[in-house]
Length: 72
Image 1 (cartoon, one colour):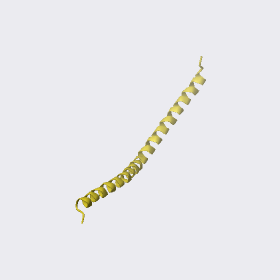
Image 2 (cartoon, rainbow, N blue to C red; image 1 turned 180 degrees about the horizontal axis):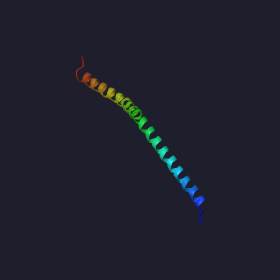
Image 3 (tube, rainbow, N blue to C red; image 1 turned 120 degrees about the vertical axis):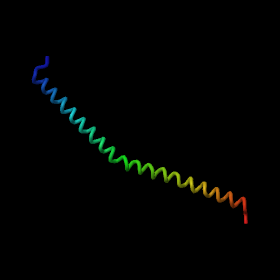
Image 4 (spheres, one colour; image 1 turned 180 degrees about the vertical axis):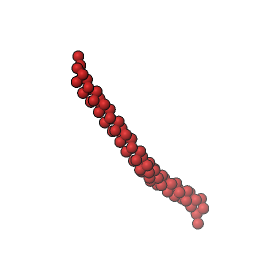
C-alpha cells in the first residue's frame, strides 16, 4: 500500500500542480484580454482595407455610367 510519506508527497505534488495550472490559466486569460482590443483593431483595419477598393470600383462604375448616359 501507500505509506503516509509517499501519500503526503503525492498530495503536495498534486496541490503544486493545481496551483501552477491555475496560475498559468490566469496568466493566459489576462494576456488574451489585454491583446483583445489590439486584435479587434487589426481586424477592423483589415476589413476597412478590403472595403475601400470595392467602394472605389463602384464609384468609378457609377461615374462611367453617367458619362455614357450623357456624353458631351
